[in-house]
Length: 243
View 1: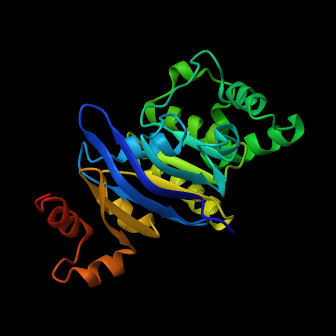
View 2 (view 1 turned 90 degrees about the horizontal axis):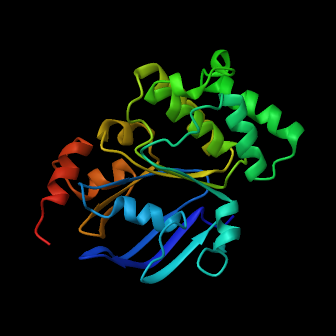
């Protein structure tokens, strides 16, 4: 099975270099946490992987598909969730799922089954006929996540997926993500909550100034950097090093 995401020599500049020759691989069936300080290049990297931003140089493969040569094909097997959930406020969760199913050409009968399963898993089923305009940020986040998973992507890209969620909602989301990983989906996410990354990520990449400083399991990272027993300590030690 090809990697869910493979980046090679990825480079992007705006008024300065944002991503600087990045090599990164996210395996199928794993949660990969991409960590870094503000301005490190995390969101720019994810936006390029999602096909929302074209790199200046390098290659992107999504589930084996060359995303620069076949952007439509790559987008069909991926899903992107930004840190600010975007919803049509006048739609209910069920109407939103029906709308998303039409965009992805999911057969109606299958779409109904998947929508109910996802909304139940995320605790949204009792609110299925309520308009999203009255939802909290956390509920909106869960509706958007359900929509992203409706076509069962091979790659799920999440930018700060747990921001604004209470403990119960965060647990629902983490349980659903873990279930998808066990089915072979590759997930790459960013988060500033290092405890979350330490608990749910199979592997961790630490990025600063557009470059990948370290990658591996938490145990592997800790073994390569003795004296740091927590991810927070290891992270701060790495990102504070001079360029």
